[in-house]
Length: 144
Image: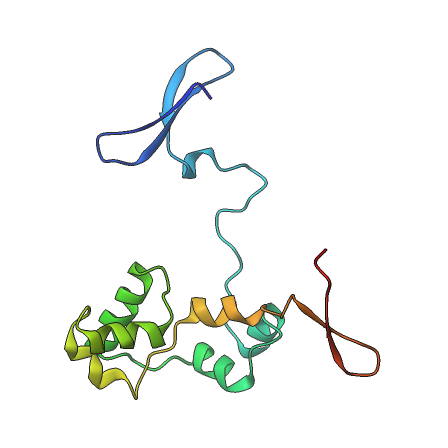
């Protein structure tokens, strides 16, 4: 790699020199290693979802495996949720009430569409500051 810069579209671009000495521009995606697959395995059945995420409960798995048709406001809400880097929906609803987001989303407060990415992202979370002892009590880990 010779240089990193922003191109005319404000996208990160890398100037790379090949083994033959030729120079060319590449994006981050084009520099992905061969050992990293382009497409991951996407689970399609409830057992495959259970294998992928052990800590998601059966009701959430069922809603992921058999999704309901979203209304246009729900689709717009999820698109906005993704644009805001998966900001927690509770904070997004506070932003709606404060007037930062469109008030039309207030009617979704009882019908929040599930974000599959957030469900899987939260599935692996475990408290890292605590560990359970053999007696079943919880004790804090020392950080010094």
